[in-house]
Length: 189
Ligand code: A4P
Ligand code: MG
Image (cartoon, rainbow, N blue to C red; front, side):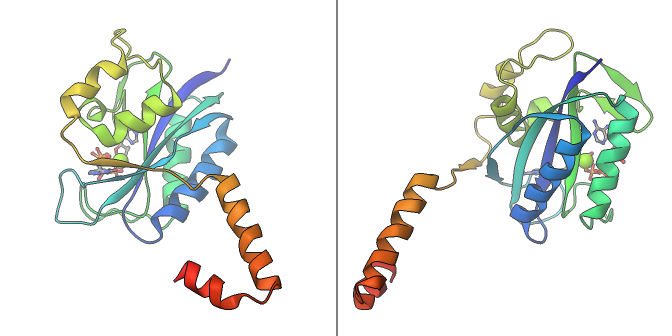
């Protein structure tokens, strides 16, 4: 039997974008990927003075038991150069199990739902993007927590539309073929 789990991703060290992209690829090996969110640039919450984060979330349907899922997340963090130096300190990759179906887990080293998720916009927004109807085990809609975190800085990074990219590539190639390099220079400059 599979369970839908949501995992939050965060990175504020190294190449943040490629850390998240390759972690999402690794997470999708742990079951069926339901959805992966866009990336969000977010102001750091807690910890020392540190750079802005990129955050994201995925939802997967998985056969893995919660502990096995956590072990896989810790393995993927290590493979992405994660070093644990300081609580809430900067990191190449942080993976948090946010929800595991409707289960409450309160064990040593594993708390689900993630204990601080409801007070963090950088968790809630991507989570709702991949699992809009998500609820806490007591039935509270995750979306109900959003208004109380509205003052936290979160900026969704919208990737350029593939069609816009394709049209500009064709236009530049055509101009170059016509020898109009000065026009290409002027447009990109
Ligand atoms: N652990 C317990 N429950 C879980 C769970 N549900 N998912 C244990 C994952 N791990 C869980 O985590 C310490 C231990 O938590 C793990 O070994 C696991 O057994 P960690 O990742 O080593 O330590 P940490 O992340 O520094 O601590 P913590 O308390 O998990 O921090 P948070 O709550 O993850 O916060 N600001 C922005 N803008 N974006 C961020 O992503 N992240 C943090 C870290 C702080 N500020 C941030 C962000
Ligand atoms: Mg963590």
